[in-house]
Length: 355
Image (cartoon, rainbow, N blue to C red; front, side, top):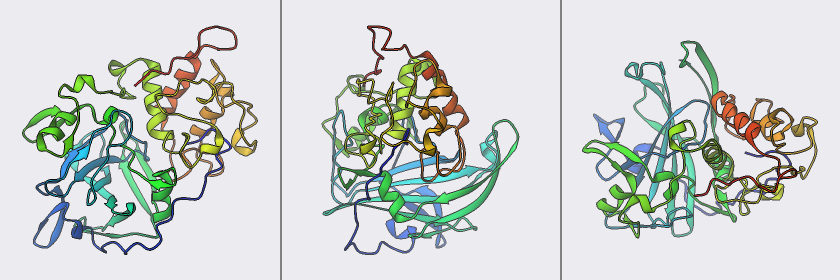
């Protein structure tokens, strides 16, 4: 996500790589019954979740990681874990038929794959068929019409975007390399309802032997807030968690939108890099006539709020793989901007929330 003047650099190339398998089944992530794929993890495939997740047009997401037998990821308290060669990280996107009653089932849209090779990570997606019993490689991407019953009982419709390979790369680029986004200590430090009982994910990964170096006590690891759970943190902490997971993969010093001069990582403490009273790098339609990325106390005058709150392709952020406004997320950022003190009129600067 950007607030303006994105100036994205070209994605890291994947030249010379072997073409990935045509069928998702070849990755041995999900069970097969009578030759048909079932969206249920095989033994050795570990499900996980994040404290706050990227908004993707109201999809439900299922995340999985599979490491080579006997291999371990290396814990880091600040950045993404160092996964061994051969690791597969998968994320499946679905639409429940009725978000008020999940027992009515769901439509599986796609499963995205990150594969760790000697040369680095590769990224691509598999589109599930109408019968929901298989998925095939979709290097060129696709647009799929879908409808569902939303939380308020209304019918929602969307032309869901399955990104092409280059769009997958663009979101995962850091210092011109492809990297995972979610598997960081602060995102994973939470409970997960495993079949054998709910337990902390960091502790579970360590117990399984797929993670080394993590604190014995998960309370000693960083933990980000859950953006839509007031009990998990302050308004500032929840808004910063939302901005990091939705924006910081592009907007940080090593990201593809680094030329914009914004950094939405939770650790950032410089108010200007957060966008407060920051003029855009380039003024265009994306600014909507506004002068600053964030005007403390005035969300309607802030470019950040303006660009989140639209679906105009030439203005909206994030600029890829989104067709809908995240109404609840936009409301959170509006409330946060309205609460911000003005560092120009006070010696107190905006708290960064911390990790």
